[in-house]
Length: 394
Image 1 (cartoon, one colour):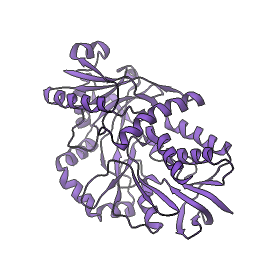
Image 2 (cartoon, rainbow, N blue to C red):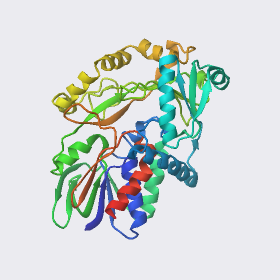
Image 3 (cartoon, helix red, strand yellow):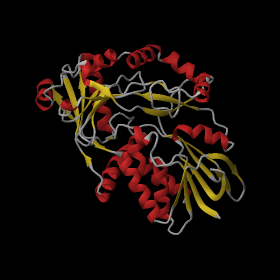
Image 4 (cartoon, rainbow, N blue to C red):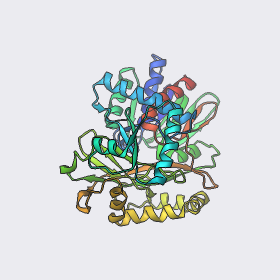
């Protein structure tokens, strides 16, 4: 059989893409291939569940626009499908004068992106969040929370209802692009399609090279470790609590995140993942680690951020460092309050010079489109990303 489209990847970007191609091309033959035995088993199923507002991104950037549109689309999709979500808001807390100055710059950036923010002084912060301490804060009222695994399940159902086919347990081992079609071998079976879209997340660079694409970047897995607060602290905050980000660092810092199940998590840090898909602590995949250590861009990234690298590793090995970061804005927390929670792994595209790719990265050929980098907030932005890809290939 010759399909019209094959989509590789059963995470939220692949599902959003497949679902929206099916909407645009009624009756088209569309196949989604996923190597795991279920959907959303990697980045999507291990993220923090935040529906981001688009505060941090450069004004006018692709990422800012996709995030703003995606937040509205995600909430509408959840409402239409009966998926529980909550618009609880996010509070970004400055704990000293230096952070307050950075917070003021962040306010200007968010305002330029069309994101509504409120300025809070220390007294108003304490009134709204009695157990949080800071000299000032910003409040983003449109930030929400959801379980993206439920979103993916609904997308999968919509795709199947539109006539799409899902093959689980189908690991891709070969991709060959010809003048008339692309052949994909997955799970020992050869499939052919007129167009291929690869949304492979943590394996995206490997699939691109498997397809014969000459790419310079490499996916470096950053492991984000979380703790869950003890249940008696589920009401410690009313909103999501974030520190003011350091603009010299690529990540947002350790924050308190309310989850849709009522719990509160603390995290993440960002340390090198020794396995792209190993979520247990100290997971090791020799091939994955060799790929990272043999890539010059990884070492150049460490050279760019030596202090942060040491600090993040220390927080991973010694929970007291993690606790100290939290106590800057939530001084009531104690070491016994931090309980184990599942980790996530972020697929970060890194260039040979050590530059982290912060925006979406697509590589195209006449019959293929590879999503090579889909950074946070990819889950929030998945519906407009999928619509954009569907428009390009449909």
